[in-house]
Length: 522
Image (spheres, rainbow, N blue to C red):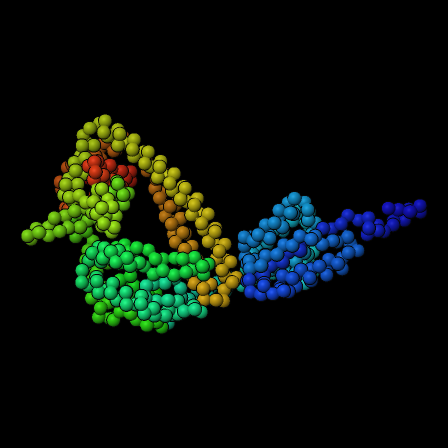
């Protein structure tokens, strides 16, 4: 506005458009939030005083509170922050005021996204204790430098935490995980305390195994007695554990070194701080028996009896795997494939139960022979191969998408956990998250390789016909071990329905392709 002489007049504050200021506060932990005047209140009071000092510029405090108590600044998973961003997008905020920059975010990437959202909607940003002007390049550079150091500090904390967990395990300390039958977690964490009643039950389970010399009879006896696995209450107050025993659960219990007072870490055993339940002699007898029964997965028990369908045969009624086993009667060995569900939970739970190994193996080999001799069956097999390859590609894509989402979520939780490090439960959480992230990343790498293999394989009808025609002559020249390798190379899965006697074979495109080209070279 100008006067009659053309001079510029100052615009009264009362006629200026108000600058609507939203105050955002945050505290990483919930400690002290129940107090009458807590950290969030202190941050808001300082911010309100600063806005009051800018009253002449038209600044006004919005009444809505944006308080995130107990939330890390390492990610955007904060309810008040999400409400604030929604208000910014709706155009109801002109300026965001915080006590310190790291209250808004401690992640450089998240901070850049927040600043981008602010700029898009014409919203300025003010830190009360650190005078920055985000409208200038120098102000933005300074903020980014500060946040880079904040992110570096979180990563250093995570590395130190991993080193601390590694050192603790080597010293035999309890560093977290699910409690086991016979022990309770100390009230303050970090130690296992003997539970006398459960310890007596654990000793009885070890003795039962030595008496029966097999897992299934012990599982049946434990379930008959109504015994369950360890039951406990999580930090959220939810009940956990207390499951019925299965073969796998019993095996994990019998091979858990905690019961002899030791802690396992990266394949080594270290003397633990907790009291042992099982003596060393009993432990060694149990391990030797398990080893003799082939539950170690060692090379010495790997397909010793020429099970052609090992790892391929599945029970169609239970959708579970069928494992190879045998019985000996009058010095003669009888081989079978047994449904895992029936073996672990009892024969009444499965309609298939078991099948003679020689009978099913002969049937599968004859079915593969017939495919090469019958054109109509060959054409149907080729269609199934193509459909299977397409379905496998779709499954891999879906799994890849799901794992990518899971990886983003786990990384967010890791950043959150790193900002709260300091207590034993949180260090346990960090270790668990890092292990899960590594597992997801390994699987994503495997999926990428599998996708490349599917794309590189081209199924040609003549190749398939030639490969299956060669199957018969080649088969007769192979040893038992080579026959098992060939079966696994050309077949991906076999489903057997014991109630109807039907068998369904899913072929492996890569194996058919390799068999054909290998035969041509010979």
